[in-house]
Length: 205
Image (cartoon, rainbow, N blue to C red):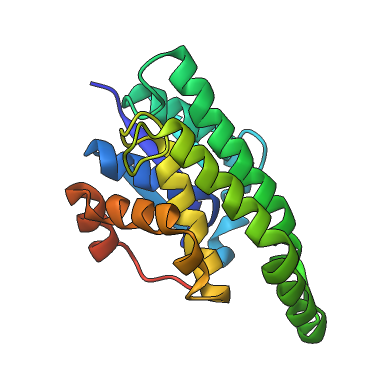
């Protein structure tokens, strides 16, 4: 039997999509969460000295994108054929485009500058990316509420996780994007996902 261990900090961050994939697949794994002060003593144990890291049958795999794609393929959440997988990747890459514009806000330490960056992001950047994602969902979703083929894939889980951060900036942001709003609702309705969301540790981010 295959064994899985996920190493990350005790936050959602870059480890949460893998946790959501495990939940959707109803796959048991060891969720190893380090507090910041513990990390120093474990850093040398990781291939690149960073997390998240997935340990699969005793071998450690770094890099969140590699981990997510491996798990999605392992548990049939990557698309039913090669072209569907390419569509999933297109959605994921479009989400990453959005994240690249959002990340500077999270990194900014100056509160006044952060407010200004947030204002610009919400007004000028975010609508373009949400429109792109809404368009891909309608194009690839086969008339349903999931991004590709009307089947749950890791693209839906990735968007669900990232959207939580966006909602912290503006809780009404998805009112103008009904397909994306429905997509998030359908993800939450998945029984194993709902159970995980109810019971997962409460963390700041």
